[in-house]
Length: 373
Image 1 (tube, one colour):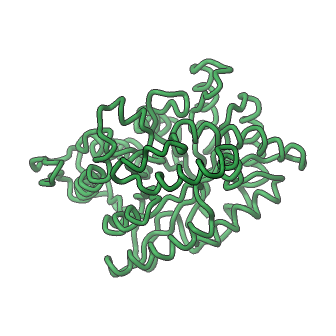
Image 2 (cartoon, rainbow, N blue to C red):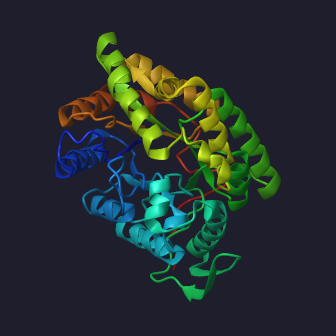
C-alpha cells in the first residue's frame, strides 16, 4: 500500500523559532525517501503559525531536486486563493522538474483569516472552486486553459511547457459536505479523507461518492487517500502521552485556526456543514470536541498503530495513507523520534498491505503515466 508522510510546518506554541521549525521539517522531508516512504505531502496555509506553508509547489520543487523517486503532493492547494493559470502552470512545471512525480490535492479552504488575508469572500468559495477546478483540470489535460463561467472568465491560452503527463488518477480533493462530494464526482477526482468526522460516517459517504461517481462517469473512481496524524510509542505510557499531549494540542489548534466553534458559519454560503458542527460544539463544549478530534487520529504502540490504520484503510477501501509525524507543539527531538519509530516499526507493515494497486490507479482503467509530446 502506498504510504506517504504529511509535513505541516506548525509552530503553534512558539517554543522554537520559525527557522528552527523549518530546519526540522525539511530534515524529515529529506529523510522520507531513504526511510521508504512513497510520497511527501504538505498543506497550503498562510498568515498564522498553524501551518507555515504559503507556497507548496516551491517547497515540492526544492524536494524534487534532492530526491529521485518519492512522489510530491499538496494536501491541499486551495484554489480560491490564487489565479487558476498560475496553479496550472505551477503543477505542470513541478511535473517536468520531478519527472512526473507530482500529485495534485485540491480544496476550497476554510480558514477565515486566510480568506480575509487574500481579500476573497468566503461565501463565494464553493462557486470559485467549481469554476477554477474545471478550468485547471481541463487545462492540465489539454494544455489550454480557458473559462467562461459566472465568476471566472479566461481567454484560451496555451500552457507552456505543455503538460508532462495526464493528471487523471493522481488528482484528489478534500470534501466534507454532501454537496462537495457531488461536485468532486463531476470533476472526476479521487477523494482525500482527512480525519475530521466519525469513521462510520466517512464510510457511508464514501459509498455514496462511489455510487455517484459511477453514475456520472460510467467508471469507478480512484481509491481514496486517508490522511491522519499519528503518534507512536514503544510503551503504552509513551503512546498515551502522544495522545494526551500532542494529538490533543493539535486538535485544539485546529479548532482555534478554523473557528469550528463559530456559529457565524450559518451565515456563510457553502459552509452549512460547519454551521451544524459549531452548534454541536456549543451544545457539548469545545473540550469534548477536541477529545473527539484527537481520538479520530491514530496513536499507540507500533502494533496498535498498524492495526488501527489498516482498519481505516479496509473500511474505506483506501488506496493509500498519509501519516503526519510532527504536530501539536512537538519539540524537534520528539518529532524525529516519532518519525524513526514510524519508519522502522510501522511503515514496512503498511507497505506490505495489498490494496489492489498503486495509489491513483482507478478500478479497471489503465492510468499509466505517459508523457505528452
